[in-house]
Amino acid sequence: MSSSAAFYLLSTLGGYLLTSFLLLKYPTLLHQRKKQRFLSKHISHRGGAGENLENTMAAFEHAVTIGTDMLELDCHITKDEQVVVSHDENLKRSTGVNVNISDLKYCVTCQCEGKDTRIPLLEEVFEAFPNTPINIDIKVNNNTLIKKVLKSLPPLGLWLKEPHTMSRSQKFVIWLSDVLLMRKSLFDHLTARGIQVYVWVLNDEQEYKRAFDLGATGVMTDYPTKLKDFLNNFSA
Ligand SMILES: *[C@@H]1O[C@H](CO)[C@@H](O)[C@H](O)[C@H]1NC(C)=O
Ligand SMILES: *[C@@H]1O[C@H](CO)[C@@H](O)[C@H](O)[C@H]1NC(C)=O
Image (tube, rainbow, N blue to C red; front, side, top):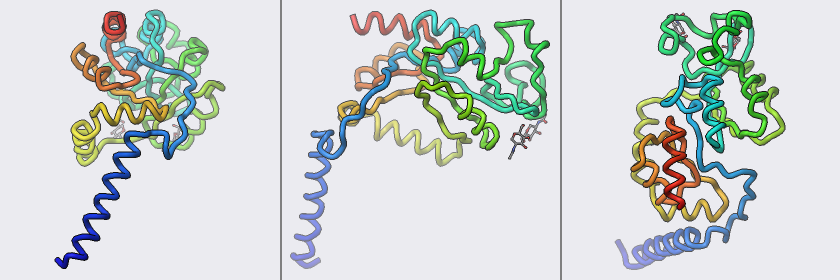
């Protein structure tokens, strides 16, 4: 390599490093600080899947009662186009019956029996918790479902996630992200720009501590009571 090429390369690299350093150090140089509508430190995954049957009204009620800042839930669409709250499309794991939600009609009368064990409609959750932010995971890429969810959204800002199925390469990216992204400097940079950083799904005190020590804005957990107790002691 000639010396001028080396000089060019090094100065470019130097410029890149300097710019990166400056932008990381001064987060609002390029970006305006985002306004925050709400801050969610405590997020209940599927309503708190470790403490109640996941994605049930009983789970959501428990999480809201202990003061969760946000509910996380999943939804699917039935044969008769009702949006229901469930993580899996197939009901084998949750009910023992090998049947797909998209092959079933929503039955209002059969559903009245057990409030704690039945599959709720998405609308019911909105009605029951009008003041709680809800993170909705749309599990299947079905346009009717997406349109229905968007139409049923209350005027409060909600956070939608695109449907996905995870491939091996995505799992690798998640592992790599943990190595590259779980850094205090990055978390500080993002929060200074007003971007909320959530970490999920964390279920024990050490993981909670690691996340908040790194500067996470919020943690999503299957154990809302455990996280609540942790936060009481952590901030004290
Ligand atoms: C979306 O869901 C509806 C209701 O279950 C169904 O009729 C339709 O075929 C689905 N669309 C696709 C593309 O799967
Ligand atoms: C449920 O749907 C999946 C994917 O479309 C299919 O492979 C499976 O056979 C279905 N299960 C039942 C019980 O119909």
